[in-house]
Length: 115
Length: 119
Image (cartoon, rainbow over all chains, first blue to last red; front, side):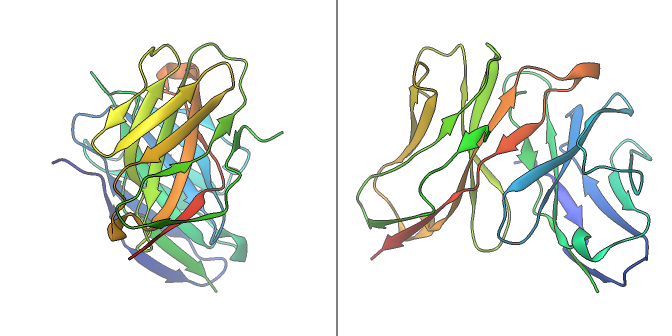
C-alpha cells in the first residue's frame, strides 16, 4: 500500500541552524501539507501546497519557514534559523486525486529537537 | 472558540468491549469533512475514518464507525471489540470547505483522547 515517507526520523540541531525536513508524498497525490505537533499538544497546520505553490499557510508559517517541491517526488520544509520553540514533531501529509481525495495521509513524522 | 472539542482526555475500556470517543465541532460552512486519526506511542498519525457533511449514512470502516449527528455537530467514534493494540491517542479533525488555490483545505485537530485498553 502506498505511503508517505519522511526523513530523517529524528533531527537534533543547534539554535540558529538551518534544517531541511524531507517528505516523499504518495506518488499520484496532488496536494501536500506540513503540520507540527509540539510534545503533548494537538496537531497544528503549517502550510499546504498545490500546483507548485503555497495554497494556504497558518500564522505559524512565518518568514523563517519555506517549502519546496524540488523534483517530481520530494517535498521539503526548510526552517532557516531554528528556535527552541521549533522543537516538535513535523508531519508531512498528502491527498488526492480521485475517490477518497478528501483524506490526508500522514507520514511517520520527523522529531526535531532544537538545543 | 474551539473548532474541535474532545472532552475526554483519557478513557479506559476492557478488551473486547466497545468504546465511544466523543467529538463535537463548530463550523458555519455547509461543506466540511470530519476525520479520525490514531496516534500510537510511536508517534505516527494513522487515518481511521472519514465522514463528509453531506453523507447521509454513518461511515463505517471495519471495527470503526461514526455516530454522526449533524444537528448536534457531533461525530463520535465507536470502536467495537477493543483490542490491546487500540491503546493510543485518538484525534478528531475537521476540514472546512475548500481553501484557495486548489487546496483541499487544512485540517483542524482536537486535543485528542488517550484510550487505554485493559486486558
